[in-house]
Image (cartoon, rainbow, N blue to C red; front, side, top):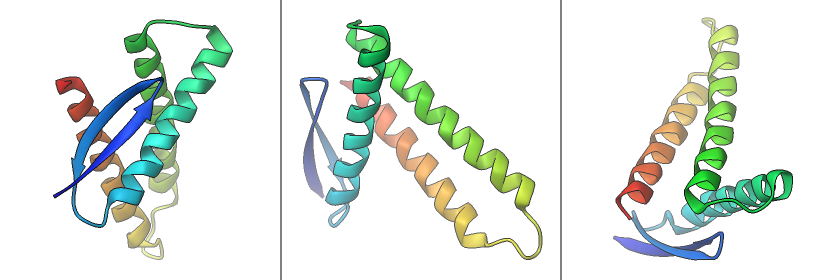
Length: 103
């Protein structure tokens, strides 16, 4: 099992991941960091937990919107790979969020 250290809002978080998933985890960490930067720019400095919650809600909103679009376009001709990929992304995001709660 590989480990990746992400820097988000000035804090280091070391997380485990499957071998070969390091770049993916780093990309997700960069996305969270970008979201927090956006929250900070829009609302000014705030508590760490509040910024993490706001970033998580923004990402959850994106996932919700993608799921809604997917459900609206599902038909026998729909690409099943897209649905599976979206479900994997949501599951992985939930796993990472659970890992952050433990810290």
